[in-house]
Image 1 (spheres, one colour):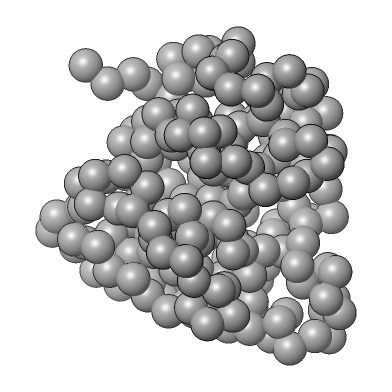
Image 2 (cartoon, rainbow, N blue to C red):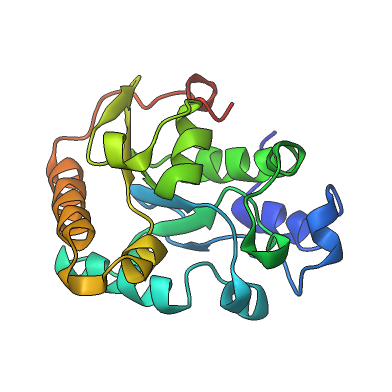
Length: 202
């Protein structure tokens, strides 16, 4: 029998499945609507997320909230999570064994939420979810349809902030991708939703 989001979060809160547990302040499980139509997946918690226990709460999180608002959504309307739930030291990329250790939590989130749309934020989350070594600039804005579920890669908000901010071409691309999110969510609901094991994650 599958666990609920609350049960998964309780188990994750004391997780020692990998080395990332040694340096964390707290586990950053995920936040948002447990019945959300769209789930955003980032790489891993940063400094502020580790302190507050919630994903995307720093400057990148503020930009994400702004972008949601531009398409008529609030953070409470969507679900936000990361590939790994503990902050990697120095904000380095998670290692393969760390991703594997966290995989059951992300799988459990997807099983519970059943989003029709998964938005991957940045290179890392996109490569993990699609199970392909792709660059975000090449695939952002493209729809990857997997048995009724859509994966839409886009830039990580932090990359926008570090690469020119609101006036940058990347920001215009991000805004375009969020319009695509709104379009997908406005489309008729597919009859069948993909089984999670069809995704590269699993």
